[in-house]
Image (cartoon, rainbow, N blue to C red; front, side, top):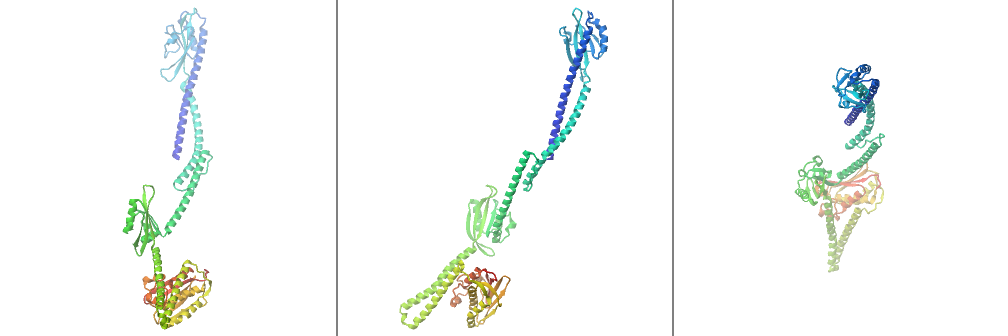
Length: 586
């Protein structure tokens, strides 16, 4: 802006100086012209007076007037010159720079009276003015020409004097105009500087500055328009930043792996889920080729197919890292900065759990069918045998009916457990919440199962806190403990032990059932809570269990805000711990 200000000042001074010189020159010419007219007028008046003085004096020749003209010439400032009718010099009051008669003077007649003229001096610095008239004899015969001439009245001094005063006046005017112009220029440039400052801040993405106004309507309108633009941009940028932040949080917290590639197959963006799936910190490798981190040939083939065809690609495949993943990969071509900048969005959706649940569901249907078919087959077989004639043998009849009763009870137990599990999964069972004394429930279960433990010479121990209460459903707690303690007895060795312990934590109660039985293999521990899953299938079937007990227990615990854990070592025993909320109403 300072450069612009200097340019305006220089332009203004140049215009003022040019106009000053032009006006001065015009005034100088005007002054010279007026001065010339004045001198010619004075010369005309003087020559008229001289002419009147010469009238009445008889003269036949111009030379006869020399005696009268000489004193007259001495009394006037002007130069007096006499010419004969042929233009020859007869008399000149000055002895230097004689000027011959002009053609107009030679041809001057009585009727023409006066002629006026001006000539430049030989030096060219000034001019002289002259007035001529014809002189006649008594009989009106032209006998000569009288000329009065005078040099211009000190033209250099007079015009210089005028110019000096003029330029002094112009300098004062120029100074005043300069100060006036400088003041208004600064006032004009101040709002322009404000507008420039606001626009520069907008360019630098700082939208907080505003134009304050300066009483220039047109500039104020422009400045306030820029203020509105800055406010709108600030709002839009804040909204965009908020949306970007929300989008980034959404992308970061999605359990779907997302990777963005540009046309050069370089990684432009990746979310934590993708890094977790590939087990590589990809956020530190932005800008590097994707092929350095994805070595699966199926994925590479999908990516290259999407680049080549420009069409979405989708495939399901297994990815083996520290764990085996089942991934649903989708590759979507997109335009990035422009239509010519093609990129890809790679989506990895971990469907391992979905496929596992589908397998669990399939296994459940198969296992349920198998479990139901066994008692139904037994009932059908014994019924057919009886119908074929075994009714006559009373001992066989009673034996068959006892077996049929056991299978019916088993069938009823399986169906009951399936229905209960279904209700638990759908959370349709309503619990009767009340203050439950944990020790009393454990002791009631102890009385039910102690005889069974003694039959196997198993020591059933209780390590319970007195007067510990929780807000829970008593029947649900009792069923949980019955299942866990019964399993601990069932899968234990003779002369082993089962210990039930209770620990009060800060927000929950911990109930652990520990045994020193056969234990559970590591690969089976993750499936122990699945429906119909049995660790020792032969022993489980002989025990009369349905294979749904632990699955029911897990759902009961989790539906009430608790959790169940398992720690087990093969041939050393197992420990099931249940954590239930303490003193919190469900």
